[in-house]
Length: 329
Image (tube, rainbow, N blue to C red):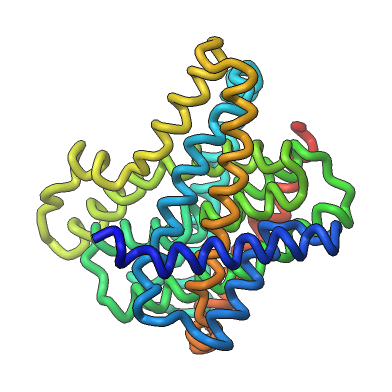
């Protein structure tokens, strides 16, 4: 059983170590970004062998484990102090993004409702995970799921590279960049990579804000399920507390648990330092896997209308959010 994962895990380790080597030769190149880029090059030049696919697919597990471990380096007093502001920003930005993308999709570009809803959820909540969760709630067609997921992945790849560059050009502080990225980028992996590429402090802020956003996925899934059920005359069966728990990202609870343990003194300085190094390695292998799963040809096949909808929505919300965050932080 374990043996089937070894070739893929070996590939993650190899790409990760190579990325580390490149970042030492070129200090300006962040090793996490390099790992993703190398993964993309390998996957789209040589391809990932069938026997390595299952192991490469574990990159999401490495990411979630890294996030849980990262909880040890987050200061609880900062979270408590910024909590109400962060929560208000997250809810406001998520709702605004969903509404803007829905209006653009249905009004200006006449994209079918289901695809528009999947794009809105993916943009506003947590990327491809939200696309899949909402698709399950509204019983969306598989073609529409693939269409929306490919569009979200395209923007994950672009924003991963663009956000740190923009942040440095604008001279943003660590807190402003981290909160901004956590509020407006799409999927957890790229948000984490972009945040830590900017700085360790920005990475922690980005991760904290993004996890708060991720927690909205269950509520969004239930809301969409009820809406589409009423429109079609169906009953919204199975969208209560069970659905909320099923769609809720469980690793968020692990992150919170480790953060509390670290801040009440259960974990000593040596243990926290070890966990910090462990999270860095876990993220490295996770992002190597993220790169290895990006299919450039698939991204090219995305139609222009969904791309325009998400682009206009992203630019509108991202610009507004940056102005607000800069004023608050």
